[in-house]
Amino acid sequence: MNYLAHSFLTFTDGQIVGQFLEDFIRNRDRFSFPKDIQDGITLHRTIDTFTDAHPAIHEAKKVFAPLVRLYAGAFVDVAMDYFVANDLKLNSLEGWKNHSQKVYRILNENYEFLPENFRRMLEKMEEGDWLYNYRFEKNIGYSMRNVLNKAKYLDTDIPVHDAFLKNKNFLQECYDDFFPDLMEHAKGINALLQLEN
Image (cartoon, rainbow, N blue to C red; front, side, top):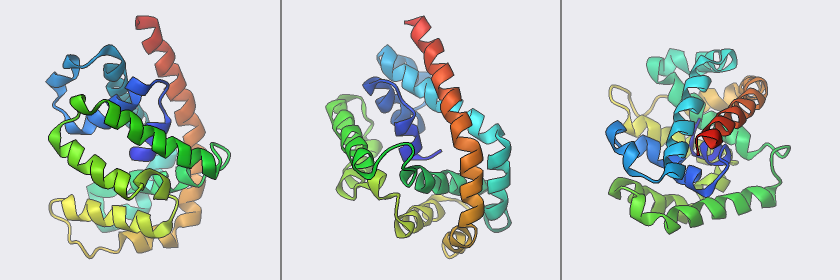
């Protein structure tokens, strides 16, 4: 799952911070944060583990695997944010806009906990309103290009966005099969985390 899905699958403000921090911190540093943020880090990890094991995600990876091999999961993550952003059963357009603004506000309120590389990204994320704008195909294209630019051993001109567009209906089916299961999983993990508090 990518940024929008992770931010949506949270239950407290601190968990939002932790969900974003997970990809930017060393494992041993996670215990230096307040418990609520640690819970978000844990939630992020369990979401990733559940996602990687889900049969619908295995099917979705087949769209990208011929082009990018082991990086297929990263492109599925980006693609799933498109479907989350367009899922009006989860939220209205106004609701998604409000969610995005809430996430930026919470992250800025917790600026002291953010590593420098994440602070730089947050500025760009907020400026371009990435979370809300994942609903547009062209912005998914930009995100996929960013993955290509960061990935070692991949050419930047691999037509992953074309594969996304060509297989969008199939990927939508994968999303529909997968995301309700993920939401239930996240609720269950959160319930366990709250028992620890």
